[in-house]
Length: 85
Length: 107
Length: 167
Image (cartoon, rainbow over all chains, first blue to last red):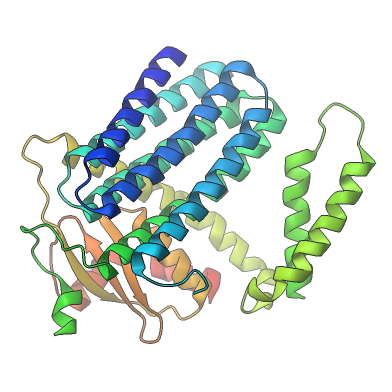
């Protein structure tokens, strides 16, 4: 079961990488990076299920918050404003 | 029994993730891609974390509950910020789009 | 009072993260958690919420518990809808941006409405005008571009419950 889940998620990561490398506009690339960040959270959750060890969930929590802040910063940059609005 | 239920939930989550990423590749412009990928990947992540809640040791369950709350708040917000940024940056819609109220109001 | 509520919530999150199950309680971690949550809460308390009296209305929590399964059902419908549109060989989409009107006023209510709209079938919030209560929504299969009909189809099913939670 875990093998199937890893195969699904690896296919997902490669589809995101395709979109990051081929995206015609910068918005497409940022979408790919955002989705790739959430897929890392999925990998951490599956490692928690596999090893029954809870410190991977710490990585998942901090990764979710940091990728959210990164996406917000990049979208403010695309909008052409400063970071304090 | 608990292992079986959490395995089923996690496989459903993985399938939803896969649909979202296929949408990320197949759909034509940035707004449609944002729609498909945000919806499917958010719910898929929620199903996988629900599997961790059912199976795991109780400390991992509490942490993944917090993680579900964070994901449900942050993923739609970042999709909204990205779509607004691409409108402001002047990325146009797909050429077969039907209606665009924002451009009509600007004129 | 805003700071007090924020300090309480932060301390609950700290307990969720560090509670040692099955071992004895580590008082060092608990006391440092109290100090950290007082520090962070007194810095960011003013930004936290608009009207803190809403946290003490007991009926709001009941409506929120009722809202969760309703919203989750629409979320699953949205995912099946996206799966159908993505896997169909002809790609049956007809996208466009429409404008809808809402009656919600408070900032937290508008945020919850926008997030719910983003996670439900075929719609995504693009821009919010909080002065007049207009939302611009990207719709993956446009059925109508009239303001009233679109509001009836998209907004009404969440607005009735969200009014009772956040207003």
